[in-house]
Length: 404
Image 1 (tube, rainbow, N blue to C red):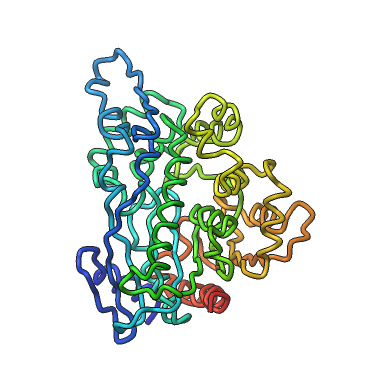
Image 2 (tube, helix red, strand yellow):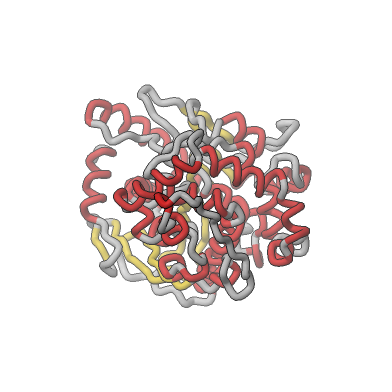
């Protein structure tokens, strides 16, 4: 079945309410509930009393301030981010799987549709189960209102009025852009929450508490875009040796945060990007001196914190970061796209192969014979369906062979 046909079939077939969905004779999908135990580190939580009140204008058109009431709530109290579902593509059968790939998605994504064909292909070609786990405040973990075009239109109008010079502000990115512009530290807290959630999931598997995954199952990673940063921190930290044998395949990802270019109508607008960059790259050390909670969770005694910080800024902990990559070099593959302007291939090379290009990590640069972009490498267009199918097959053969 061609890529475009399989993509269409899976979008119609997959839902996230049923306990089990049969894809074909070989693959099924099972949906699982997950409760995050780490909401209290978020703004407004038990351990993080950080609050923020947006100073709205005196202009009566701004009242009631929809930005404040809809988007700038206490993060620790958003139920969708605490109680959510994740999805397991697995070989058909009732026996517990012995091999699993954790799949992490990109920034500002609200729907799994793009990844369904990827997950099915990974199962078919590697024989491993693929677990789609959402990053905090993304996918299943975000309120539906943040994806509602009518409600987001009202916010977008206010945002453009407040910031008339903003670039790439759209209905698709106005929710995340507004939230990160107002409180850029959300990037750090949501990243840490997701890291701890994944560790909690792995610990439950290792304890034999998962109905479908064996406690001794091998765990690998397939990551896309910003999801690669999460996978890299997990691999670099290697808590309790969980990932000592794990492999990581990164698609359109792998560069440190401050070498990305996320201003896009699908990712972040320009105002949010400036605010985020200023906080997590230029002034993070200063913020840590003033914010005791931030200092506690990002201090040098926490391995995950050091690894996280090393992946935010190319010039921070450079030797440390490169030594970790050197140690794992034979378990890392990065596949990039020549015309990717969000995660440029040369920045992936700069990060993974190091300043002196002496880390032997394979970074493959592909280029497709059709118009594509970072957010949509395999467009659903009948006019180029054959070319897309060919390039998808070629790319995933390489990535699946590495993970196999």
